[in-house]
Picture 1 (spheres, rainbow, N blue to C red):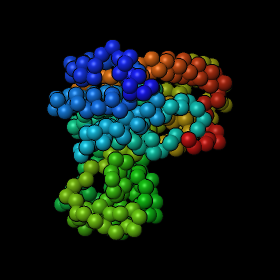
Picture 2: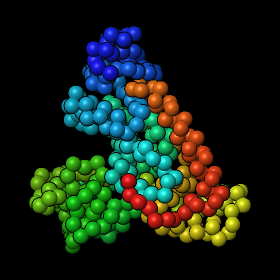
Picture 3: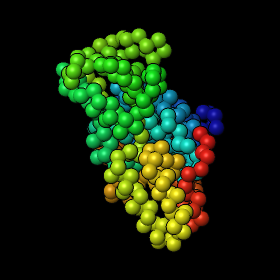
Picture 4: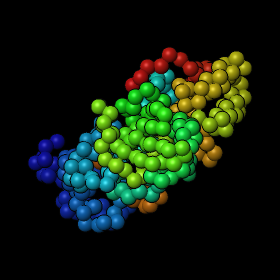
Length: 342
């Protein structure tokens, strides 16, 4: 719909929309050009320094467009705009999860867990239904390092590996690390540039950012915070907890022992298991209500850019998940297969 047509059909002015957003609660907005809605959100934030907004979109593509517009309108110097990049595909499909989207989700959850300031959180409708690691688990995974601090080289490497970082010869991508003697290179999921940590025995003597293209160091850094890179923990306790949950489900559904064993063997792969994201709640205690909404500790204003399409998307996802979970567990299909990346 064009801007002119939208204004002619509007039952409220943009100023009234800004006032409604400023009052808090839930605001459904339909048939409005995307740029106009983003301008209204930016105006609301500019008029109230304490205002926080959660924008629910119909799909991920729409969320990306809102993110781009709001970063431009707000300047976003301090990460004021957050995006929870939940996939539009079901976690129950036999496909390898998109690692970049997973790291983006963990970066957003890490900012929420540490209580970092934010102004707008953009969530696709499907993201409201997605189970996430509990906020307390994400907070425990935050690793703060500073010049002059003490940490053993092997302890640091093991900690990063447990957080889901991949060890590689050369750090060029987010979520990776490399170790060469006393130098530890690591690229955090939410970082603009990777950092190089220099150790002298167990003391951190220097931290510098560097260009992943030519590997040349740049600015000196006094401290750095590294967040988890994977949603699924690789600890033995978490894996055993997930296996216990699956055993109970298999027993309830009278699944043949051989098929149940195949699922349990797959779970032994930890975060590398193809089905790990589908069974995410099983890795933690009390995750029945652990979602992106429960991760926002404040009471932000909730707005929906396409309320009708968003509600339809949520209803469709709920019915799909329920049907696919029961069907695939009954058939024993929820196990390892040759996945394809999306």
